[in-house]
Length: 371
Image 1 (tube, rainbow, N blue to C red):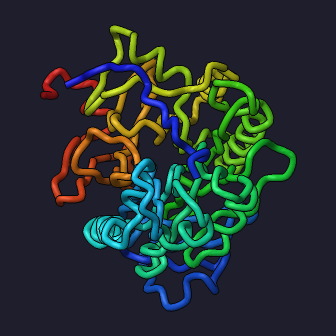
Image 2 (image 1 turned 180 degrees about the vertical axis):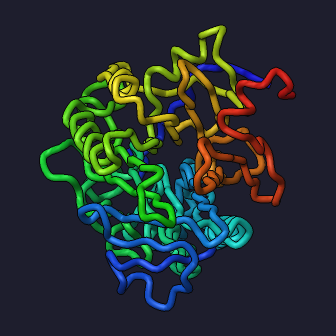
């Protein structure tokens, strides 16, 4: 059931205080891993995964964990400190670990707002530790809150890259924000079949601006360069891709109001996009390779929307009671790709084990038989 409400802004932010894979790119971070899918530093240093022996590849998306850690503080005026107890921290880690053990993903992508309190390093290390313990590769693209707790955006990203099982490559020189990366998925013939672009959507347009940041023109140019490189490597044919970022594109807001769009899942609040449109969506239409955009940011949305022949997909809020959320229980979104097949499957796995929105993309958005 769809429900639209005003964007709930986090007014207290910042101021109040498996299957494992082998990885030749950073082998010391995956020592002892058991091969399933494989990932190597192919395509000029880009992390390159391959399908498993069963022809499948699975990505688990974590969104908005907002981890606050453990603090001895009786300040009842702060919601974050109310839940900064050992009990809440253990529950957060237990929930994520259960999802990883249940789904056994080949890759985890965290779409930002990883932490929500100090100390930043300790909280980052703790909430991202389940992937290391289970030897599952993971990558992040940062959210608007991740730089608000004593470390700059670049410092946060550089630190995350030192953690076990992280596969993020160094920041791209000369373009905005820190966590812009590319990951590829290849078949048994070593041909790249899908590209995953991680784009850093920043925090604010300007420090005094009320608008969220947007994907900058230099980031768009970088995407075009990568897209063209993969097209040329593929004999002049485009390679299908997906984009993961924290803040939704402006076109998501447009789609919400379009009578022709199709929505599956929960739409509980309006997308909190930037007030500015830099043209990324239009550029992807021109290039013709991106079929889906994947976001975090809104905690009461977990829907997938078909609009203008593209998918706009929210992850499921993966945090706990440190911030607002009316979708209970929390959970994760999963993507599954099959070698040689177009499209993909995706579903929501809740922390209680239930599966929702078990959908085929694009089939279940085009069929009049869908219920």
